[in-house]
Amino acid sequence: MEDMKQIHDFAAKRSDKLRDRNTNCTVVPFPEFAALKAEVEKLRVEISMLLLERDELRFVICKNIETAYMLALGSLEYKAFELNCNVLRIKRKIDLIQAKKNRQEKIALSAIDKLLDKEFAGFQCQLNEQIDKMNKALDHSQGHVLTDEETKQIKKLYRSIVKALHPDLHPEITPAQMQLFQNAVQAYENGDIGNLLIISEMVAEPVVPEQSESGLSILTKDKERLTKTLELIREQIANIKSEYPYTMKELVNAPEQVAEKRTELEKMIEELKEAYDLYVGRLKEVLR
Image (cartoon, rainbow, N blue to C red):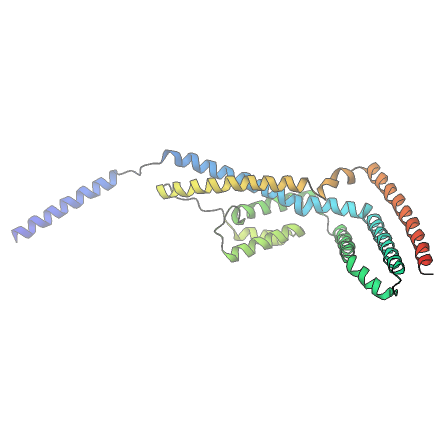
């Protein structure tokens, strides 16, 4: 019994010592953790702002530029391109007929027209694309115009969703979260404040890793990935600004340049009409 009492007393004293040691124990801090955490957060903020800039360019600014351009010049460009296609086609038709006449072969106009349909299929696709652009421009011009307050609210909501769900910031998101983000993109593109409000209420700020060696490793990898992402988004923005329709921004904002371009297109249309009529006359001569 005496031995058991001594063992019990020893265990009790050891437990008290361990308790005292744990009470006085402090977590060893990682000096670089706070600095790295701040750098990562700064990158996230910068990326979220750049993503907003990129998507505003794609879904708002470029759409507005293209709508203005198509409404001002699209119909004339379409007519000029259509006439040019007609001129090229009839010229090619004359060449094919003349070649058969030179070889003293039988001329089958239906077969020649089928061949021309194949050769000019690409031109027809471009014409159809131009019609699609015009239809989209007309639809966009008839849509609801957001007030300045609504525009600010949409940007704020969308940015908060981007920070919480964008795959460039969170590559680990689930398929369901990805679908939610795609719905947010669609809502932003359509100026749908209601859906953006719903989605923003569902998302939260990303969880910050705890201050530990593993947390430090996570932040280091995040910094490397986010730095690369930042450069990629900057490159995407630069590309958007170097391509149509953004390159038409200066033109659509200058009425005198629009008027000059219209005059140029109208002159081209008249010249193409004259050229087409000339080839129609030549075709009749070749068919005699």
